[in-house]
Amino acid sequence: MAVDSSNPSQPAGQAGQEGAPRKPDPICAVIARTRHDMIHAEIMEAARRNVLLAEVRIDYLAKAPDFGRLLADKPLPLLATVRRREDKGRFKGTEDERRMLLRQAIVAGFDWVDIEEDLIKSIPRYGKTKRIVSYHNFDEVPSDLHAIFRRMHEADADVIKIACMPKQIEDVARVLDLVRFAKKPTIAFCMGDMGVPSRLAQLALGAPFTYGALNPERLAAPGMLTVGQLQNIYGVRRLNKETKIYGVVGDPIGHSLSPIVHNIGFRKLGINALYLPFKVPEGKLANFLASHTPLKIQGLSVTIPHKESAVHQATEMESLVAQTQSANTLVRTASGFKAMNTDRPAILESLTAGLPANPDGSPGSLKQKMALVLGAGGVARSVVHALTDAGAIVTVTNRTDEKAHKLAGDMGCRQVDWAMRMSTLCDIVVNCTSCGMYPEVDETPIHASVFKKGMVVMDTIYNPENTLMIKQARGHGATVVTGLDMFIRQAAAQFRAFTGQEPPVDLMRQVAKNALTPITVRPAAAKAGDGPGEPAGEKSDGPADPPAGAPA
Image (cartoon, rainbow, N blue to C red; front, side):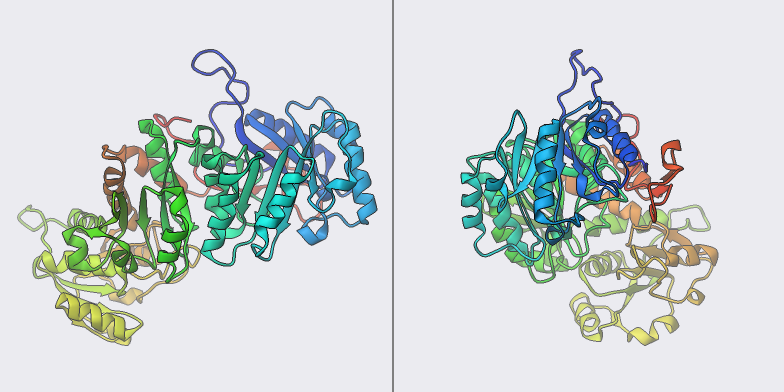
């Protein structure tokens, strides 16, 4: 069994600070395995993780279920689910056979059973088994969502579960609204990358629990997080209706380390807050802010492609934003959002710190240095502003000449065609494009022949920290500045703006470095594999355990 590298440091049942067993985390651990022995192993692991309950996906079993074996010595409540193929399950039998399996699971002694809303009337309540009435839609958020929800409220069930695939950012808000107005315990979230925040935000709105995979290689639904991520990155056991919501908006967003560093900062300082990764398509920032008003978002980090459009969503802005026309931070005010730019000072600090000292030992200076800036987006605006303000002679280039021409005109610097970037004389090269960012780690925005000893090369990408461009520049003797240093500096400034408190910078830097270090764990339990096509050892899914000084 693969180990989720975000393992909690406190096992299930371990005494808390006052000597009492810790309350289970509001997580349903999803177990989707083909063999009974592996299901049993993950049930034990779920109990060790101290989750509320575990869902056994009976439809994943390669053989007929042995309920006595599955339920033997169960250490925590178990939920039985037999998902049909039309709901992306794996059950191959008829509906009559599926209903029979669900009835057998109830009689056998499962604590919970998941029954689809169109089927629940045909399976009567029996014994002490609690019932989840569920609705799944992998294509869309239906226009009659509220009618479906009302129908589910009338069903004989203890918990309502709704999971849909959003087509637009407003869909996510529509689904989350169900939790706010529910009269029965309700779990409602969206699937896919765009739906990830809803899996967590619903807990702050009152949902009884959320779903998470024990095994990072076996995510039963798109966008599902792991138990380790829910516990160690997002701290779900601390979430309640008083939790303040923050986040990062961008597209793509899955690579972002912002949730890791900000959430660890909140936890270290005892701040009741949650920082989420919001995937917002280009041109949809205004739609996102309007539709997600009920979440009362207190602050946002802004990344590609929204840094320029964020300026227009603010009701007030600091002077740096007005000068650069780029904002990477939005902070809630009484009248809306204040736009800020923490990129610009972070860039200048990182570049200055990376400059070689002068021959006489004095600190290096950017004055009169020839700088080539690759890209013309929001971060490029901050870079060009920082460089020109420090006295550097800047040349901008971009794949789209029109954007480069506009940036050069706005900032009073030179512009060259993208095809001419290799022949431009420079002392400093700064990459502000997404070229080389995970997962396209084998790409670079400029040929290695440009680099030489004495040159300073900076990449604003931090995932990976050592991009191909950085590796090649270092190999040619250039001084390199990675994007991670800039990232931590700007994140720390954002944290101050969000909370008014000094961030634990060293801790934030350490967890970011941990998250960028791939770890593969192959425990003894995994050596035999788990059936055809299921590898024995599997890649970990995130940062390692929190370092010393970080609350679990």
